[in-house]
Length: 65
Image (cartoon, rainbow, N blue to C red):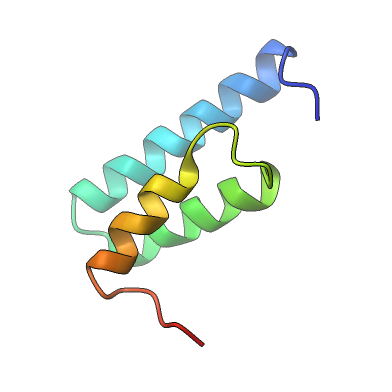
């Protein structure tokens, strides 16, 4: 819950960057896995991972079960 701690915050930003990079490179499965892990670690979405999830949804890569 505390985002003032530098190392956990750095890790989360790095994970978001990794997810974005994977999506840009066309590795959609890997990008989706990274976004889902980010949302698991940041359920309140303070870093904005749902934006990347929205990109995947518009691309039709996520099933609406």
